[in-house]
Each structure stands twice: as structure tokens, then as C-alpha cells.
Length: 185
Image (tube, rainbow, N blue to C red; front, side):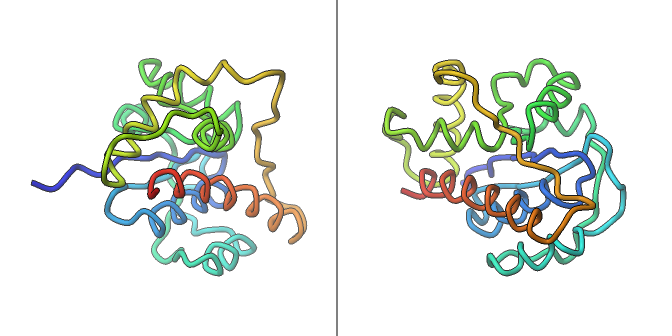
């Protein structure tokens, strides 16, 4: 019997830039082990990936074909095994919709920092989906162990220069790379 994919929900504001990049990168790199989706807290419903973000996502080996922005709903949050928000505020808004998911909601940067830490326990599970499930379980209690204040927000490039898009995308890609490396190792 095939293992159910891990349902990952990426959350940003308009759902046309940062969260679709996370969704499509995770789907491309983790394949059938994940059901990666995204939504926005103030989505530009029905729109495709932003013009300056689409080529960045595609240059990293992921497709933006068929993407349409969606507004986040309580049902989406409840259905997710892992919520990856692009800012602390996005995480808070997702958790407000489904408070029981608080231990499965992280910023993208926070989750990558936790699972990529040399202090993170060795994952025992075999198979990408099972490894991701174990990562989620082990990450929750480590959220507060970090020292000091960390800026986990990935800047919103909408309406800004191509350089800002590239910088935001680089942050996203680097965080996704850490998560993928741990899930696949």
C-alpha cells in the first residue's frame, strides 16, 4: 500500500510570488512524497505566478504551469500536515484559522533552521514521506530552543525590483534545499 503524501501548505499574502515558489520547488524536488499547495492571506485569486518570480522558479527546475492563486481557508489549514508560512504574521493568520495546527505551523526559515541544525536528531524513518513526518514531529518542541530573536520573514518582492525578487527567491530556495536534503538523506 502506497504511503499517503505529506500535505504541505505554503502561505504568503497574495499567493502569486513567495508561496507558489515554495509549493512548486517542494513538489519538484520531493515528488509524490508530498502534496504541496499554497494559499494567500489576501490572495489575488485566480492569478498566475508573478511575472518576475516565474522565471526564477523555472530556472530552479520547477514549473509554474497551471498555477492559480487561492485564498487560505480553515479547511486548507486543517488538512495540512505542515504549514510553511513566509512570515511570522502569515503563520499567525494560518493558526488563527485552525488553532489545533499550531505545532505543525512554522515559518519556512524557522523550519529549515530547526531541521538543518547540527543539534537536530537523526531521522530514523526510511522513505521521504515518513522522514518528513518525523521531521515535523521532532521540529515542534525545538521551536523555542533557539537563542535570541531571529528574523524569519522573507521579504515580499511585489512591486519591487528584480533584485528584490532574486533575493527573496534565493532565501526561499536555500530554505527548501535544507528541508529537501534532510528529507532525502
